[in-house]
Length: 119
Image 1 (cartoon, one colour):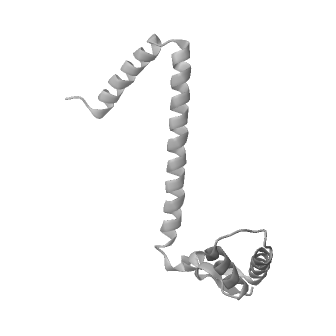
Image 2 (spheres, rainbow, N blue to C red; image 1 turned 90 degrees about the horizontal axis):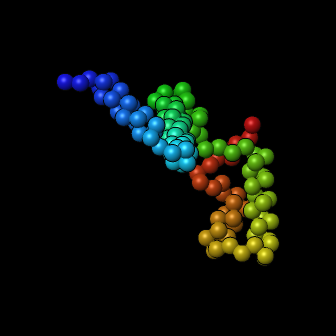
Image 3 (cartoon, rainbow, N blue to C red; image 1 turned 90 degrees about the vertical axis):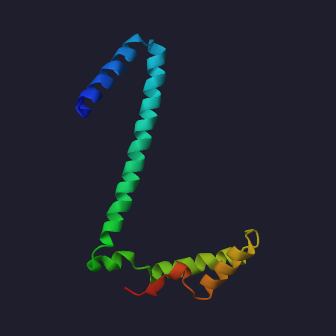
């Protein structure tokens, strides 16, 4: 019975032999595909890793503040002023849902469950 390492070595030898038989143009195409797949794999691993790091904070109560939905007063004032400008500007065509959302912000309702705090 072959070990996993022996099977991997045998597969690697087969791949090396196939690569030796390939033409230069075929190798370039293969290299491009391998590079793309490696980049995609790395991106997915990094995204999962970042998400996992954030989720790990949820395991400890001392990190609750990392998940607070708060907005400082200065940012809130800016958000309200931009919402008002968008509502006042008739050239901004937006849906009734967006208009209602902007009006809610102008009326003093922080969106998405955020709380306005003064630092």
